[in-house]
Length: 375
Image 1 (cartoon, rainbow, N blue to C red):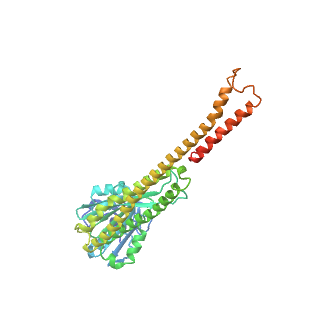
Image 2 (cartoon, rainbow, N blue to C red):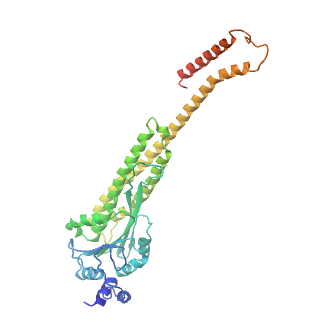
């Protein structure tokens, strides 16, 4: 096969879909082995490109267009193309090859989208928010607890395109799990979409378990004897990170219900039952997040109450000592006025008597305050 023919298959479909303009562009691009995880004719964003026939992974051809042509010619199997943070230029050829809607392409490239499911003709576009627990030795007022990313999926009758954003959320385990279950893969691209949704929701539950450990630690510290000294910034930081987790989890509820209940041509009816199971797991995650939010509010209120009680105790102690010190201050103030005619001023035992009276008065006040819990 000539070099021009290979180039045409890499970036355009001159004979599949009538994309003559893409075919002309292809003649000016070098042929690159697409099966290599770090190389792509569209840049370095391609993670993997695999063809599946009958639930089994087909040998890599290194040629995306040829793989698509064979799948559409045979009417069996599908292509799974995985990308990581592609640019507009890198994604342009793929968008034209699979006839993707410009609005969905823009969302996939720009990211920062809410979880959603949209239909563009025969193509389903889904957005999932991924989360990752950030390990830390000790929770502080500035600790990052939850890191978020995104996975976008274009699902057609014979292809799946996944676009990942962020430092985590690798779909390698999803691919390996599906390849270990060929019967599930025979259900087509919708099985891949379910596996991605299930993987994302499982990560939610794992992160929630880790966040619960942080909340339990803060709760223990707050209700310890030195709870009033706990930095409230730790509680506020947990609430902020929990809000970030909530923004990723809660909006996914409606899209999953649509996938589970709403008839869609690209979603096999048998797969919809699996989406209902994922929706149940998501509901559990949502309920746990709501419970954590309420618990943190209670912990924060308890901490503020402890601070108030500690401040009141300090004020009582200060007031009690001020009352005790007021007695010698008053007596010494009176005798410090230097009048000639003052009681017992020239008496031999006057000094000792005054000191004794001051000591007894201070002792009585001290015992009284101790008995009432002020000191």
